[in-house]
Structure formats: C-alpha cells, structure tokens
Length: 254
Image (tube, rainbow, N blue to C red; front, side):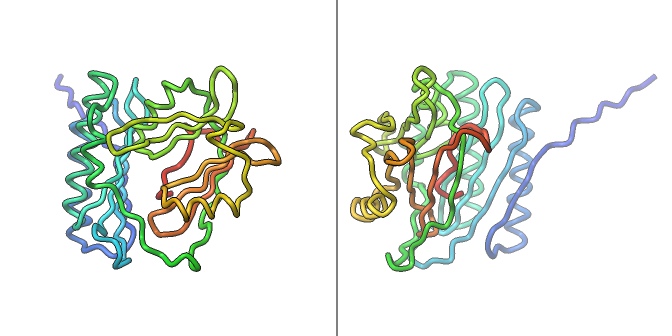
C-alpha cells in the first residue's frame, strides 16, 4: 500500500497598503512562500506587510515589515525601507531568514542592528501644526528581566521596549541609544523618566527630534511613551493592569 505524504499548507499572510502594481504584489507573495518553506515547519505564521508611502519627503518610500513566530525562540520581526517594493521584499525577507538562523544557532542577532540602520524607515516630514496623536495604545507590560527585555528589543526590531521588571514589577524601558545597538535601561519614577504631563512630553519630543520620549505620569505613577510614527504623527502608549496582554509595545509603525 502506497501512502502519499502531503506537505502542510504554509501559513503565510501578505498585506498591501497603498498603491502597488499587481505583479509586485504577486512577487511579494511568492517570495514570502519561499521564505516560509525555507524556515521550516516550526516557524509560523509568516506575515509580510508592504506599505507604499506617498509623502515626497521620504526618500525610501517602500516600507516592508516581516515577522514570524519561531518555536523555542519566540516572535521575530524585521522592518526596513528601500526605494522599490521588490527591493524591500528581498531585503526584509532575507534579513528575517538570516536573523532566524542566528537566533536558533547562537541566541542573538549579532551585528544586524548596525547593518540595518542604513535601511531604517524614515519619518515623514509633517508640519508641526498638523501632527496629532493618531493612535492610543493600552498594553499590559509583560514581566521580564532586563536581559529578556533587551533580547526582545532586538528580536522584534524595535527602538524601545516597555516591560514590567520581573524583580520589582515597576514599569521599565529598554531602548537603543545608537545605530550600533547600545542599549539603555530606565524605569518609571527615576530621573531618566521624570514626572511630566502630555503637553510637556510632546514639546520635548519635538525639541529633541528623538524617536520617542518616556516619562512617569504624575497621576498613577506609571510609565508613558510618546513616539513618532512613520506617517509624521504621534502614538501614545500607556500601561494598564488588565486588557490586552502581549510581549510588550507595538512598533512605531503600528
């Protein structure tokens, strides 16, 4: 008796935002399927999101984000931007595959943060008077040690990562200080995250030109993060005691 072995269907999701030629969308789908097959059955689902930015101030308008869940490792994400959709697809999927191999074999991503800095998505140049808080995000920070939080910071390709310190329970933040990957830690209620109101936080974000500002809310004494979105607007993250539970904070694009 001959038994036929069927390969399990690949769990791949491709999302297109903005105008993109049909052939480029099909190219993205084919490349995502090939990457998922190469990563193996313990990597799923693979999600690829392509966004075409129409703001003329952005020199690399084709933004690609790819993420996958690796068994034994956790979620892995890469977000890059180039001049064309196909170039972004190739770069983001190739980087994701390379990062998955490195994480599986050595438990870190090496010098990937330094290499990828040249392809970081750009912030659209939006006039100050037109900027607004386009997204409010309430999250339950996951309890992590600082070392675990740093691992997630790089594995998820974020500029900052909000978490609850496993030892103290205090809202804490790890963030990149330079393209080379230097990391700084800070916690709510300390000098690095002083008490501010939202208006002052927005003023500091504008004056410094940084990707985000973290502070302590004077009312509930918990952390807040105001960050720049790639569309030129702002996003606000506030921790809560119940509600959505996840690995931490969303990306600046979300």
